[in-house]
Amino acid sequence: MTPSRHRVAPSPAPVDLSARTAPFLFQGPDGAIGATGTLHPLPRGPLATLPDRISRAMEGMAPTGLIGGALPFDRDADDCLWMADQTSRTPIAARTQPEIAPTWTVTPEPSAEAYAEAVQQALDLMKNQANLPQPLRKIVLARTLALVCDQVIPVPSVLARLCQDASVTAFQVALPPSTDTGPDTVTDTATDTDGARLLVGASPELLVRKSGAQILSHPLAGSARRRSDAAQDRAAAQALTASAKDLREHAIVVEFILDTLAPHCTTLTAPSVPEITSSATMWHLGTPIRGELRDADMPSVQIAGLLHPTPAVCGSPRDRAAQIIQQLEPVARDFYAGAVGWTAANGDGAWYVSIRCAEIQGRSARLYAGAGIVPGSVPAQEAAETGAKFAALLRALGLPHDMAIPTDPH
Ligand SMILES: C=C(O[C@@H]1C=C(C(=O)O)C=C[C@H]1O)C(=O)O
Figure 1 (spheres, rainbow, N blue to C red):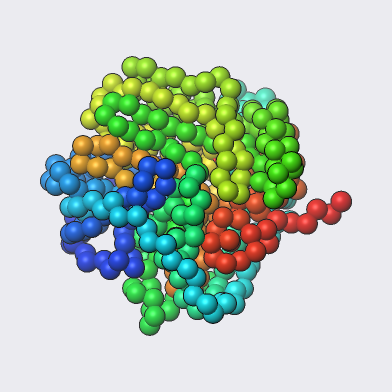
Figure 2 (cartoon, protein in one colour):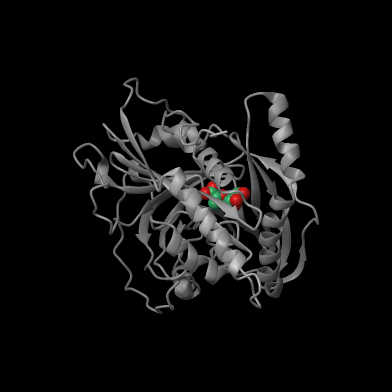
């Protein structure tokens, strides 16, 4: 990560976004929430300037208003937040995919093999640095699938399909125009309103929820693919709860969140053993961490900014892991593995880790999936795990959910 650039842009003008490009929408265990009414993009900036920008925005905020949007993976990159004067609780409408079957080209970037090689490099780096005073303990490496469709991707249908899994929070956030104008970016402004660039996904992971002084973070780390056969599925969950590698990977995240929140809390508790949690496609180890804030007025987005990115998506120590991620991953993360969420006028809100997501624009989509690497990780297994993590999005796009899981050579 580069040194902070403390800059705050002037306040941009209000915009009128159509329902198709709703600036942000969330639906999950917390219910449905989105913005309506007059909308202002917040001045963009890095995390270092977030508290200042948020407190200024909240000064003039209507009591019915809502701030929402996305924080990028890189703490020094500009975020994308919006402020609306009204909150909508209208659930996302159920929709079906149009009848016509689209044709897709799918390009893994990097390939699953190149990803496994990068995992090996990460393992070698951890081994070589094992004797440093602060050894690298975990690096989360991601890969992507670049998809191009022969028609504009029907985002409302994709989002509706993601909502079918009640255990995750489906989301859509409008992003600023891409700086990447490479050949992969295919838009069709004739049929896609605004050719909007959207982050669309279904996060299973709560970064922080705040209600008054009470906060809850529910980190996930340690994963196994769900199986269609019930006995195999149960066995996969049992193996996960007994896996020393996954328990170590998980403990690093819990420790980081406890350390980060402790100075801001009067009480902070977490069970000593993780629970098994699931989405429709994955099993995870998860730990509910509950705290009571010293300053009950601290806005939820600011707490998200303190925590983000946790070792669930970055690594430990954070800054060194982020540097290695930049070296080993060929595609920039941008808003993947950041945070998406909302903050109400009283500061309450919920922020989720932006995983199980895709950046969609016109006929193009880029899907992202990562896995935590710790000493003991096996490169081919991590490639398979990331393949399984694409399933929710692939299924929502109408593609075979297991198409990115490499076939086992053995
Ligand atoms: C990085 C991702 O997921 C994270 C990594 C996990 C793991 O390594 O076990 C589990 C849940 C998430 O915190 C992703 O889905 O892209």
